[in-house]
Image 1: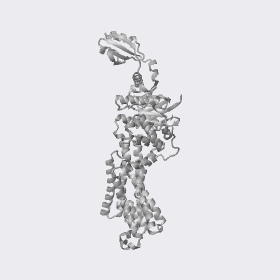
Image 2 (image 1 turned 45 degrees about the vertical axis):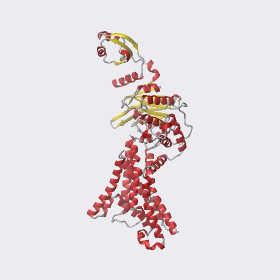
Image 3 (image 1 turned 135 degrees about the vertical axis):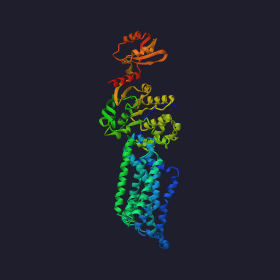
Image 4 (image 1 turned 120 degrees about the vertical axis):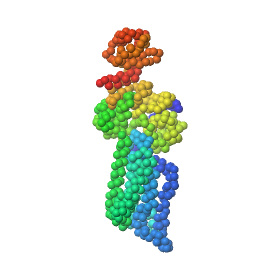
Length: 282
Length: 306
């Protein structure tokens, strides 16, 4: 492989004057997640809750399908419809899987292959790097929560022929998936920053999620108190959903505590993430 | 001469260990070697200059940018080839190089075009669509160089660029470095512990030890410096002769010739005196050409003595 005869020559182009520094990380991350094996299979399954609710919306808006109303009576109100969709067990489960699929190796891979040096030798701050990584997980989580939510609103308008969704429900339907996606993104990225071993990251993330639900379930059963729901990630999400959509909660415990717990944990995870990345830089 | 790097009283510690100890340097245009034994602080100094590590005290300017305040903007004009393997394995050569070009602020089209150019330049044109984790260690060094060149920096930092390379690949890498710097296209700082690499590529050398810059000189000036180094051939018991000169560095060369470096205050005639005492004959005696290794060993020795 000899040196080319013409030798080194300078680049005569110009740098972009203004640009979003983390955008290439985002675009590259989106592509590489999409190229992963079985990504299409997972995405197909992740879209399943949307289709279930699409049918439910259709049934609820068509008087001629009155005989099926019992099946969809839980979603008679718009608030209930979106609360049920976003806190639907399979959707939360797929969001957990999507977090793992898109985020498990985002930072652990960089730790494993020393890729931080590549990023840090470019005009990027630590926060640009974190924003880029965050945006990848957020994209996939919102793609299967917020986007179907918006599509459900559109479907409801089309099926009923009028814009009947109250404004607060409309805003809640936009805000709730964003907050939950932020929480899950910070969770998976924090776990991903703890180890360069992808399998360890997957196991730890899943174990923390399952363990939190199991502990809450056991304590609730033993002590007969709903307050133990605060140990559970999934139940906190549901309680927080009740608060946002102004729905009577499933558990006899203040919903605002779940909001505080989720906010605190998100903040805590982001802090750990920043500390871990700073340590990796050194 | 334009000043490329100016550092004033830079200090950096890892916990209680002082990795950079009050470093003051002024570097102009051209190619500089940063030489030092393992653990001397070369990589840490590079990381401080590049803004990866914040110095605990001191300040400086790189290409007119303050290292504390403008280190992000500065990186548009800096290329860095780290010693460690740091690649994104699932990417191919073009994707990785253009991706890093985009992260430097190039448009996608420009980055892709330039990626092809630099991959061609470093000799990876045939492997540019192969995933980088299938590259040999020599190819990995080349791709690292390509990623450092993609945005056409004004200043290039090379940290042990020939590490892990076979002799042929090493020579080709050194040729590339010479080519980059010889046309004045780029200023280069090259850190290495391989003395011939520095000697064959650099015009100036900074020698580091224990976190300090202990010597700064031009390679071309080495011969004009008086290092008290001689080549001698002996007949007799060399071991006894060695014992008579405990403070001298004596190396066995080719064809029975020894290179002997005397302390500065050691008169030449004393060699003959010691030869008589050791009952050996000196059959050949001449002043030796000074190498970078001599300068390096002398500088390290003096620094340790102080």
